[in-house]
Image (cartoon, rainbow, N blue to C red):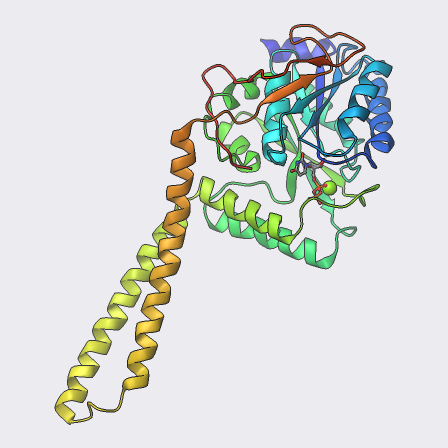
Length: 351
Ligand code: UDP
Ligand code: MG
């Protein structure tokens, strides 16, 4: 069994770090990740073949230059660049698939220093004791604003109410083994929401708590509008409950209308037919509103089906700091026009 070998031998770890316009924070956090990697290597938890893999998500600032510079400095730093910005989830997926055949385990972590890198060691230990997935779970959210904490926690509750299995207060800081990555490859959807997809894969999983810090520099790329769109995507990618709710609402409104019709007929026989213009207007507006909202939600699902049937690649890697098949120090290797599709994988435009 591979898992048993892992317990005695240091395993190859790839730390996957998505970066989007992070030139101000990367020079601060990159050495922290490297120190952590060295520390774990010295403790013989991971092998010296482990790497820090930056995924440049189509940044328009100097992020890729910094990543290329780091790759020249130390062979443990490597990087890939997406041909354009595709969003955090696609960037993480690109990194995971790039690492899949090169390592035993991956840990995905944000590059802004908010996720405590010290939790990685415990994650690796949990893997070595037999867990295939280790979720980093925020133990405190004090550094987040009340608004961010409230919206994030309400979102987790809403998701589980919608029937999407998510780990409470877990973002995308997690360890997954090569075995899980191989299964993840079989999830062909292009509207990806990793937090909801990974629990569906199964295998033994556990949680490691960590403290969420302040961003070391730069600003969050998740303003309210992006957070809402991620929440909406998460729900509509993984749950059909909203459609069922529309159906239930339809039944409810129909029953209400039926009662109203009886009331109208009764009013007719009582001779009160002229008044009632306002109630009629209200009903027409109410039903019209419900119909439009329902159509919108159904439209969202149809839009997702549309993207899935297009089967576009989920990410396109334009450059690497190394050759595709081997690790090379030095000059970034340009692999322009190279479409990186996982074997048989399909894609789309969802971010
Ligand atoms: N990120 C990305 N593509 C994007 C937006 C963000 O790769 O389109 C990366 C970003 O560089 C960071 C991580 O995703 O490493 C989390 O983003 P951010 O810190 O802005 O989000 P927050 O922590 O505020 O939710
Ligand atoms: Mg952040």
